[in-house]
Length: 526
Image (cartoon, rainbow, N blue to C red):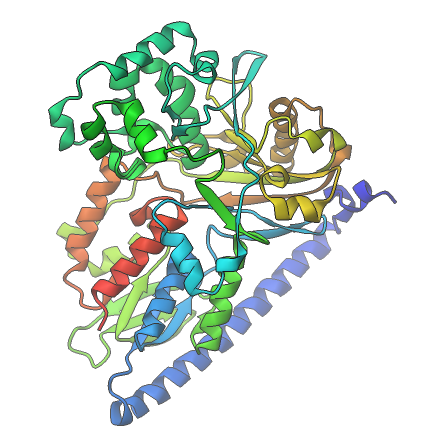
């Protein structure tokens, strides 16, 4: 049997009956284990609470609902400020959007793979966790842009100095190749057009700023593919301050969008604005869970929370319901995805303060392929590529992970490559993602990877694959999200000891999530 055959999904399928029985047995065992653990936590909390009221009344109990990055960060903050902490996670593992898969003997990030260096939020936090020495830069190779119509596909390197696709040097040959001569002339008008004074304070979307300063060509050909590829949404839905903190002030200071980008980006080389961890970003999750366990934080997986009761007159004002158990708490942090959070919060709010959900499609999928293809040793598309929406490719982006991360290249070895393809955009229905057809998605990923990389890939080249799905994604932060956040803050202020954190409030990216969580928990720390 060849290596390809050993890793072929078809060769590993058991009979339908035995597979169904195995899943039922596993689900039953998992639920029973979670229930036993939750019962131990409840009993321990009751006995310790009684003791604490006599010997140490300053040790309240906090429950964190959700074990993603926001939940784990919140748990650590609470434990360090003296709380006894329980984390209840509905899934079987912790980490949320930071996850890992084992494919062809390689442990590969199947969610967030990097973090923004600017601002130092994540770097400082990793230092606190003693992970500073594991921070690793990218290889520094450029990313590319895929364009075209029909079956015509064009690939070009992205401009070296840019911010969310906005070029700092609008007359650069790299920019002209992508947007054309006429659009380049229009973009250069940004350098001489006065900056509106009202832009210092009024609400602005990223799309509005780019269109007015540099024209539709830059927006469509450069900014939209980058924003769609990185944040799965349209630049018209993103507030300029959320997209690029400091850009508005820099525009007012320099009088130009291009000059503002240059001021913020400086001379940073390609790839230097993000970093990762040696071994992958999931190292952050394993480190947090290990340190929390060592600090006696109860981490309970497979424990969905169905209801939270609040009685401000009770000794412990919150009662959290999970798997038929009731846990009392002095403080609760909700760190779930948007819909799960609102399902718990709205029954607690008055009718006038209940918050509606966004009725948009928000499912995305990430396909990881490990391929045996020596032709990719030269990284023909650098660290990967972003795809313009009208290009003849279904995927919105591809990351050549083994060309981007030195540690992964060393582990995979010459000739073996790891590529990750993203499918789906927030607010748009993507049939191949929403159908749940794993085989069709895998076949599409191989087809799209061939087009993007310019190297023909076949099923026989794939030595392993995995699909990671995300079903409650949110845009980076637009006007609607900002309004909902303000509405939530107004409703939550009536509840002492209740905090809500997560990417749907903080915005996409580890820097935003970690910073927002630490600020939120600290604001109401006892």
